[in-house]
Length: 141
Image 1 (cartoon, rainbow, N blue to C red):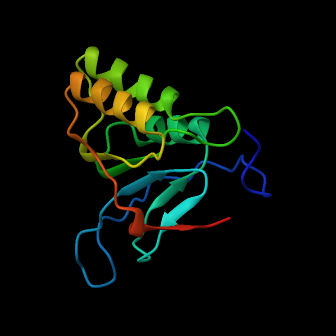
Image 2 (image 1 turned 180 degrees about the horizontal axis):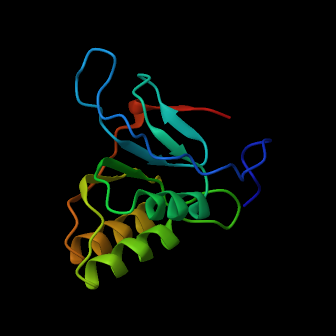
């Protein structure tokens, strides 16, 4: 599959936020979106990771920090998929050290692989759900 964006797919891995409240003193939500072309249409804040390597590196840098929402697309740029991140999550859980996450949403338009990812993560004990909300997204590139 050709690169769907003209931009360079590799980007520096964002650092985890150290502040836990917004300007109004409300708790901040750590929302991580792993998707090669989409962003949230409603402008909700998220750490956006476009490749599996960036996603794996980011989760490793978090080192146990809770992710409130983790949004996963299966098919990423070129031959890349979210599978390396899924593998990391499953290994961590089987070793008794699951990545703390409030909810994982699988929003892939690849029906078969999206379903498989949900099954893998459920079997590992993660709170995961399939999302079909097409009106939630805008293409960023």
